[in-house]
Length: 448
Image 1 (tube, rainbow, N blue to C red):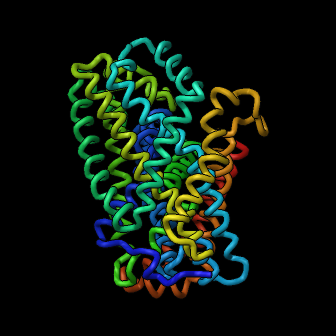
Image 2: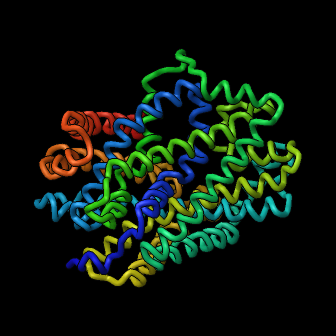
Image 3: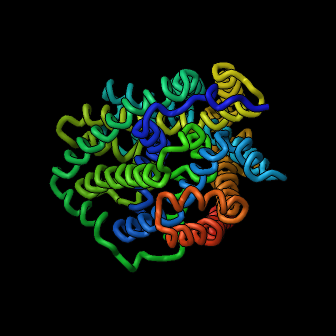
């Protein structure tokens, strides 16, 4: 059973949609993941390949999902059923399962950012002793009470925003958080670039080292581009379903991609110059966020205030992304079962917390070593299934759906916004190139 479109909600403005969709892309993937993956893959050459991936497969697939949602005025499962018929609705079920799994462990990481704001306010993270910071981080995530409290706070914030609706909740908060996020990024970039020796980090990020170019690096860049633009999880289908049919999708999509890239590049400019200024390995990995960066702030004038701003930045990025992860599952209940938004949000948020977030939060403490599935903790298993299996499958199905099943309808939309020859390029990327490349990324992630 479905509900009328006007009961679902709609974006109040084009800028509101762009900021909300950009908020989905500008999550921890952009602020946290891009700098360390760029650091591991040679900086400048990775940036060029990443840009190429974003403006080919990334943008085409993001636009494809937005057009599916806008055309059907429904979230993933209902949209696939309405436009494709047959068994296509199973592609939507995959998307719902994917976002449900992502939300489970993402809420835990979001909780970490809240905890580290308080740690920064107290000054407890300001030390140059990397071993001490690593031990403190391990101790924190291993504390079951602390892990559950901060995960609960983050989950509550996310659900409260989504309950308020599309305009009054998601759009309103993104109009506040996204400009604030970019202001914080720019401020921290300026501070980072003024450090002695920071120029080496800037050179590293913008100068291509072609000896680092490899198949694996290209797949890393493609995987990050697809992940950061939320392709394959039905997020853009849900967000696109709230767009009016008069809105130009291509223009909005390019703005979203631009903001996502801008955030990634600014994050690189914020972290890598500081890393070089203090002689840290740019390929330090995920620990850059909660271990390396606090050590760097401890060596800067005004480091405590910078640490507070940095972790606030991470929290804002996590919130804007988390609400976009929760929304498709909520929209699924609204569209498929006529559940009111408030009730749908509570059902998804509470069940997700109990079933997934609790074991994910306890993966590093109470359940560490005791509950291993296929050699992985609950946290790692959720991440692996969602990011390495379901998102690529969802992306490939969306590509085939647009490129082959509903192409005449999609082309009708595209020819109004771009030259006709561009539509043929679009179809080739969507229907041929994207499934092949996303499939290669999936194979690499699972078996490589």
